[in-house]
Every structure is written in structure tokens, then in C-alpha cells.
Length: 171
Image (cartoon, rainbow, N blue to C red; front, side, top):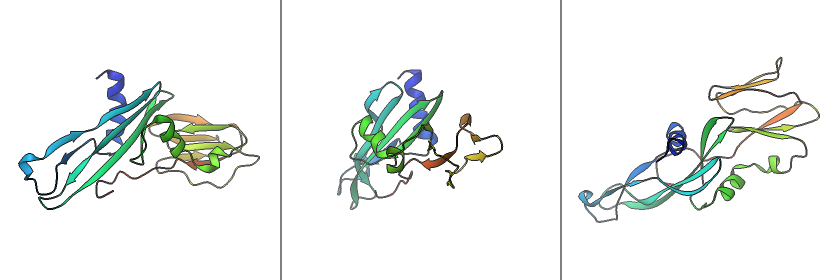
């Protein structure tokens, strides 16, 4: 694995997503369970799509199939990752799923900073930012500890990306 690939994988890990799991079928003893590791299923410049799937084993009598998909990307030198539905198998489909309808319909300029889209508006609109994001209206600066500060010179609205949680239970 290249250093660049490791950065995409680290972004998935940093978000708290599972990268490996015990897998086995109902009725099979634990000694026959395997460790399934996350694998790459699609790659293009600036993005990677990973999958982790298999029969999640709780006990000899209980197992269920799970399919996790994670898209990882890099913007302005910062790596990010989000979980998308388990039936997505291409980067294009993952990016389409992540983008909220309001962003797709936007008429003005749209900027993305990790978990949030910034849509140009005629006046500033009330918005809810994802956790750890901070808006400083006096300097028109969006701050987030994992990204460089972003100065937004136009009136805007913030729209969080769609995402699934990092849950590790039955999905």
C-alpha cells in the first residue's frame, strides 16, 4: 500500500468506521471465524471507495450479512471520509448520494469543506453546521480543526453532507 493509500485508509479510521470484522456463518464454531478486512473497490484522482462486507458473527447461532461502504477523498490537502449505503459500488454513485438535493439545485457558487457545502445566496441564511465547525461572521471565516480556515466573501448558507453513522451494530 502506498503512502497516499494509507492516508485515505487513515481518514476512514479517524472517523471511527470499522475496517475489519469477525465473519462466519451460523452454526460454525468461533475457531472457523475469519477476520475480514476493508478492501478498495473504486479509485480515481482524489477519491477512494472502500468496502467491508461479510457475515457478522455474534455467536454460533446468530450471524447476519452486513455491507459497509466508505468514500474517502482529499480537498485542499485534507483527507476526509464518509460512510455511504452498502449497495454503492462506484465513486460517482457515492458522491451523488452524499450531495443533498438543496446543493444539487443551487444556482450560485458552491464550495465544499469536508462535511459541509457552502452555497452562495443573496443574503446570509440561518444554517446548522456539523459539529466542530465554527462560523465567524465578522471575518466571514469557517473554521474546522481538520481543515484550513476558509474565508467566504459572499452571503451563504451551510448545508451538511448526507452521511451514515459509524455504527458497528446490525445495519
